[in-house]
Image (cartoon, rainbow, N blue to C red):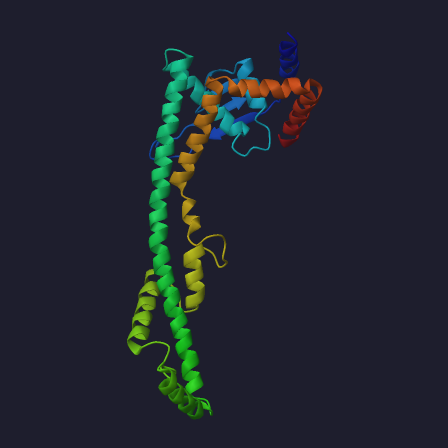
Length: 283
């Protein structure tokens, strides 16, 4: 009984605001939709009113204002909508939970396949980047070698190295690479610069860094930026919102919200009032 009283008290101070969710386009959903809920009550799909949130849904939505980046009011709104849609197509709660789990498995598979595909591309690009970096290094070593051969002490040093070669049976005077290898490296870099449409003002070193990090600065693992794929982002978001739908269907989302309320009703109501004042300022 006390729990219902607490809920009634909270629902008196529902913030006057609009929460919006824009679904991301993906191969699975090429016609994205927009959801809105006004004042934690009226629910809209693409600007058309489709119903009113229940008290349980209102509390779940209120409880989404926390530090968890995947459990935001926007994603929770999508979870509420998905839970409703799955329930409509199900015989009962057990069937709805089963269907929701099935969707999660499919999304997880699709996300895994997409990540694997990106990982294969990254592997190929790393091999290419390593080859380009190797050619840069031998070019630099060759320049150092040529400079050293032009110095005043080069003949004396070369004579000493020839003596060492005879004693140790190891080469000391040979260039760091063959001319053939040097030519192959230059051709590879010419081809790469052409593919990248690089201007003459950018050095090979800087171009390679941009290729590896999509930036002028080294940041994280080479080519990790490729995981910032719109398709992968959409799949991850679908998984997040569907997982919230599952928690709504199995009752754990409401239980979590109810526990948060009953842990300290006075502070919870104070927090909801503050949220209401904040949304008034934002408007």
